[in-house]
Image (tube, rainbow, N blue to C red; front, side, top):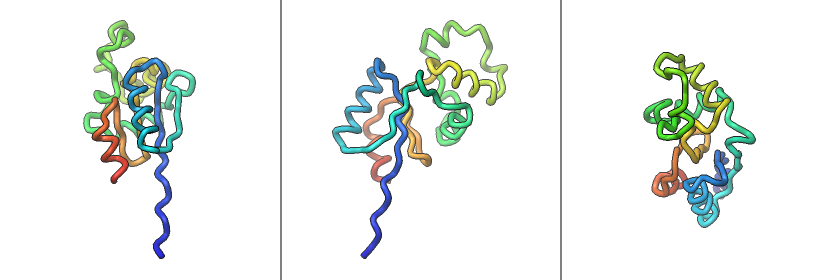
Length: 124
């Protein structure tokens, strides 16, 4: 008999009033996916966690950064002049700058609500 595959641990960074986060949570629940929920503002990802997430994206910090947010528009800093470490620290300190939700299983990452990517994550 083959040993059962251990369940993949999914971390779900979310904010309850975010529409995309609510859709993603509903999708996960409807598909019986277990996950660890992290409230982005009460328990934000550390700079180190964001670095690991960023490494799994296609476009690095551009994929993480919510450029349409009012918080980003109010920034009094040129992010192009920042080091990656400085930018990740800023994102950790002010998670309103992050796109959401963020889902990761440690190997893959999904930023924003994307049901087809979520389905692919479960089948990988």
